[in-house]
Image (cartoon, rainbow, N blue to C red):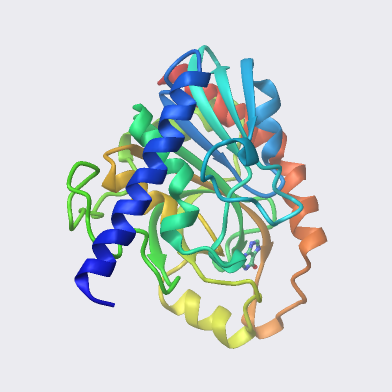
Length: 283
Ligand code: HPA
């Protein structure tokens, strides 16, 4: 691909982001301050949004379409704990066939509307042997093993810098606040760890599980990281929370079953909701 192809692809993407932004400007009563991304089994938070404007992704110009049944596919805007929020109820994944630039397009649009914070949630497989199904992991750092980066290609300097710094991608102050909120709520299964993003959709072999652990990861999943990269590029503060749905032991690897992942994540959804609400109240 020559650089003019690259430039025209970038121009096309900018034009689509702007069209979606203008559509949302005409539909949303308030500018969202916080973007919440709800992963598998965690979509219920969206039902708590007050004065909600619910826009199916299919109605928003150029938004990708969710292809995963466990992801609802709505943008829900309104107030949560009194704060103007935009909830992405259902996310997009690299394994669905999207490039990471495409799958982060909704977040880019919301950042262009003026949101200043991203709170991202998702489920993950535990690699740290000290974790158990139901552990909640605050993301302290990540490894990106998805063979793509949402910032690849021409950079739009108005959106962010060419080489964004990720030395402290997960806001230490927000993590401290989250730990305080968890303590206040009596949630004792909160840990902090490193999340590794893999492309999926196949789950890990025992050898891959061993490798990821040796690389320093505490939990593995197929999302989160592309969105965090875009959020940091756009200057948003980031908090990441993963529900550890299963724990993978390479020396005794058990089948990892989607139904069980969803069941375990749903069992934690109420605590995740409480934590998210407490956090929004304290911001
Ligand atoms: N691996 C990858 N992604 C996951 C897992 C897992 O074990 N559990 C939930 N999401």
